[in-house]
Amino acid sequence: MDLSFGPRYEDFRSEVRQFIQEHGSKSPQAGNSGSKKAMAWQTLLIENGYAARTIPKDYGGYGGSPDIIESRIIAEEFSKKQISTGLGGQGISMLVPVLLEMGSEAQKKQFVGPTIRGEMLWCQGYSEPGAGSDLASLSTKAVIDGDDWVINGQKIWTSTAHLADWIFCLVRTEPTKPKHQGISFLLFKMNTPGIEIRPLVDMTGDANFNEVFFTDVRVPKDQIVGERGQGWMVANAILGHERGSLAPPDAAQSRLNGVIKLMEEKNFAGEKVIDNPVFRDRLMKIQGRILAMKCNDLRLLSAKINKNQDTQLASMIVKLQGTELRHELESLAIDVMGELGLAYGDNPYIKGGGSWQYQYMYYLGLIIGGGTSQIQKNIISERGLGMPREPKIERKD
Image (tube, rainbow, N blue to C red; front, side):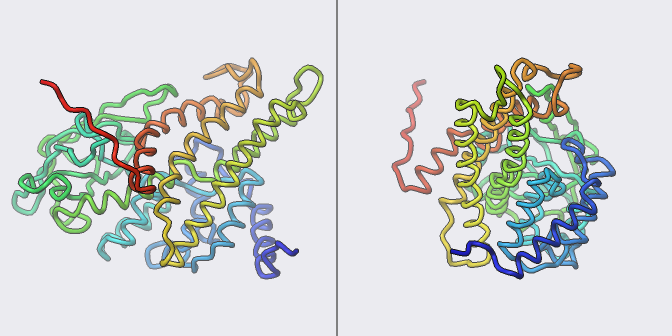
């Protein structure tokens, strides 16, 4: 049985390997996503079709045709060498796909190119102190005054707001309509007068989240995606891309390769850790789950081309499966390092620049962020499997 992709794709694999051999040294290290080196690497990837591959050239992309196998080959070869597959983040992974689908021609030309090149950083204004899991209950409001929206309210858990150039933000514009129908989706600069940002330090020790306050913030009324009151539809499209981007299988595969390297280098009681049956068993279980993630990802990629496929349930499991798996994977690496797994910060004995410890804490947070695992399980059971809705406890005043 021949399980190869065939001569054409093997030639393409050779091209990818040649690119990595010639340019792999230019790849930035993890955590340097905002550096000049990372942006130069992103430009190189776009020019060669390894990032923004199917985004039209008119909007700054490579302009290639969708090809599932080519996408898989790129992911496989980059992960083998632990080479960066390019910039990510909320603008590239979440906003750009929705702008390409729902944005105006002017918005596509203004925002897509600078965003995919890393020249324009975005944050997401969704959650509020009183509207977390029940996002549609948000109360930040926007009213028309002449040619502007005037925004007042507060957002919380706003990732990278302290670094972002722009925000895509949900606001209530139709207060008399049902909560899901009264929301609009606005785009505006983060240096607009009236915006205050207060960083929130999380368990990684960094301020990855922020509180954002809006006081009479004026935004041109044409900076809206879709029509007034259609924000919930746009938001749901964004959430689908968000949950798919929080723990992609290609990144998990690259980290798994790093764990295997650690296990081959580290000795325990006179033997390599990879030869220890307990650790090897944990590794093989994670390998199997990553393989399942990759197969599910292929299903979703296929559905983007073959529109008649029903992938509702397949897409629902991505965030739950991916974030919990990454947390377990980083945990395995920490255990493999033994006492050095406890090193953090500026400890001189730290391995991998502290990325294993950082990612362990980061993905523990992502099990909560972007919709908690408990919320994800409810979505899967109720919307995906058709099970009865979770009973609501009556309030007793």
